[in-house]
Amino acid sequence: MPKYPNKNKYNNKTLKQSFRTTETFSNTIQPFNEIFKSSMLHVESLRVIDAVIYMYLKSSEMYGICPYCGAISYKVHSVYIRTLRDLPVLNRKVNILFQARKFFCKNTICSKKTFAEQPGDEICRYRRRTKRCETIIGNLGVKMSAINTRLLLKSMQIPVSPSTVLRTIYRMILPDCGVVTAVGVDDWAFRKGVTYGSILVDLKTGDVIDLLADRETESFECWIRKHTDVNLVSRDRSTNYSSAIANTGRGIAEVADRFHLVKNMSDCVTKVIIDNYSDYRNAIRPEEVTMSETTLEESEVFSETSVELEQKNDPRINMFNEVKELQFKGFKINAIARKLHIARQTVRKYMQYKTLPKRRSNARNEYYKYDQYVENEYAKGETLKDIYEDILNKGFEGSITPFYYHYKYLSRKRVKKAGCIRKEKPVDNREPLIPVKNISAVVFKSIREYKLNEKDKDLMGILMGLKWFESLYKAAESFYKVIMGNKAELLDQWIEEHRNTTLSKLRTFIIGIKLDIKAVRNAIIYPVSNGIVEGFVNKLKAIKRIMYGRASLELLKRKMIFINKSFQLK
Image: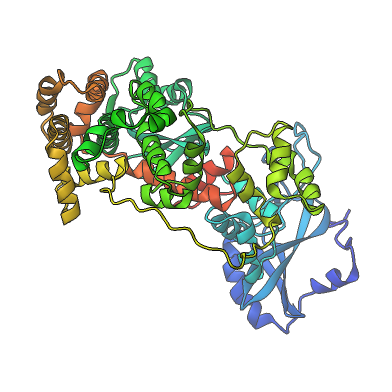
């Protein structure tokens, strides 16, 4: 029996003729043989046909190794041709025609009788591209969306589909994170306000090591138990992560992030200002008649709600009162919105109410249920306002302004009415009120010793004249210095000094600090920050937006882990 019984078994004569050694490219082939030597491949011939480079390769070994049992075989069963795409050369496509042999497996206990050879590390099983070509696809795929990767590779003469890019990413072998001793953890949103996950970062190497499917206690606790070398965790003020660490029973040092501590104090300052906003208003408008002294006609509009909601410290009441006062003076929606720096939709809503209703959940409007009906009615000549009133009876719960924005593509161009007489605009000469968030921002600029302009200095002068604000400012300023300093013992002094404060929101903040006292102390002691984790969360948001929010957890994990790493294919 001959050594190669089926060596002339080719699919067509062209490939058979191609493997006949030619002398035309003998000087060209030799350098390529040196390149492919480490991959155990030998270049038989090289040709250029229609601007495409064809390389004909064989294995340089006389034997094959069974991939199932590892036995060596010299007995050839048959020969066939594999076509693979390689990286382009001089902007020309490179096709590799590899003459692959099938061998008989002589191992009697092997489950396979024959096997195909897989020489070296450049040609892998079941692949249509070389390993280096797929490496390029994978490196680009983890940094861009699959569609953009396809377009870029197309310009590089490597035609692939977006699905191929994704399959290549999924074939990546996730690296072992090794010994992890310090971990930063934070949550991120799959869908904001609906579902969340957790991101874990090695604080020593600065690399993402894992993504969890949720931010619950059980998931993080399970991860901590698997990684027994972790002795420090940097986190935000979340109780879920703190509970997970406590459940493990290990002496893991928890470090509260300084940024979140300062942010919590900033939120506390904002809440206290909301509760006492009327004092600030009376301070800058001393000549103004208070709401309790207004006429009966005005008070019937909003005084009942004001008294009721002030007891509950609803932050909307101040803005609601401002809107109703300007409405009573004759201001229009746009003018009120510009003056108070709030949305027109909010002004319109407040102007329609006699009493301010309770908050309701932000239910998502299901426009898709009404799209066909709205388009059909609009085509018949109905106005959007009439259509809106109709679908309200059909169960639609959205407000009219978002409805107009959603269906604005149907709107006809507005025609200005000729000869309309402009009404005289009302005038409000009162001192403008600064929004609560702007006041809070100025306060923290002062606490951090940033340079203030004259307007900000005047605001701080007015606020410091209020006793409650003076107490709040001293507490916030001293807390900021303690957190940004390096003396943990000052924290206990700060708590003792301000724990009997009359400001309820500040008291609540101090209670929260006492419940998480160990982590807050460690924030002062350890030079650890959760900033790098926040940075990766922003990177994760960018990746989600690039893929239009459709990426799975597994794909996001691979993209985040391989951002700054090389990878291996399975």
